[in-house]
Image 1 (cartoon, one colour):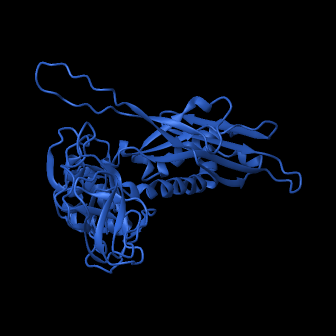
Image 2: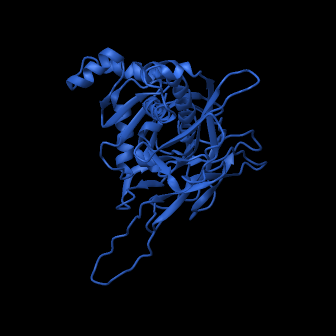
Image 3: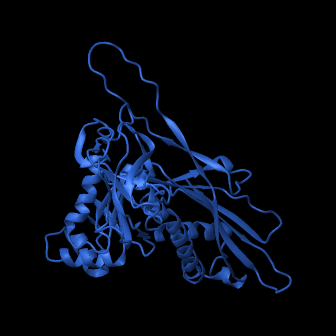
Length: 405
């Protein structure tokens, strides 16, 4: 005899299935904020995620006190996503497995897709970059180089690095590695499921939601206009005069002579620093352009992120451009550490006076969802909805690297 399913059983199963269907978000920092557990949160509320401190080491016997740099980053809970369906009282007599297959799995998968799509849009915050637009990587070296980029940014070498790639990226790399030595379980995973599993320092996943990026069409021979610049915008010149948009949000630029540094030692990595363009930008009638960049260029102190300011007339290049006046559209995979991005969720309010209402809240899974069912007298049905309130935030862009294809 089957036991009548309860709202708690249904919500727990929904959370389990949803988390298992996440690809990108599965490898990210997921924060559940319980400050709204009693009354519930609404769209527009914020929760705070703590950023780790970064210290400066001094030499000699003299005491040098630095101000504590620990801070919290507000994450806006700006998205309420839901999936709607209906089930009858007789459906509650099903086993939880049957109920899950019929009702929960397809809807939890749809919610997971929506959450992943929103999170992957954060790729435009990421300035580390490997691969070439228009060319699907086939060599393992491309992905290993992504790991090198994370190493250069002092990203921990732990078991918390993930790699999400497109279906074509996965097919190519699995095919290339099929004849190489590989640990037994991972090799079996590649053979049976066509996926990488754990390899090259990453936990791999294929995500059909990987975004595509369109690069700007450049023009001219851009240079730095004035030495000793820093901050969130860089003045340049010698672009094509009064051209249409030349740099698009998410493009990556480099400045000759401006090298990345290890964020712990502040020693140059010997690799030109990358800066992501934060807004579409065009040149003026004289060929001048002020490029908005992220992160802000910091040339000294505990948050120094480059070897120094670029010199006057230093060349400006946009990564991924084969030539000027050419715009390319290419898929983007991501190599990232768990702490590069955060998905924050909070409790929505539970309505009263309905047929069924429940909430699953899990700090362990970092998720919170509500399920509400009510009788509709006009149709004699029981419409139901599952809702989640969440927000995405880039915490440490340096702990992620794009893989272009």
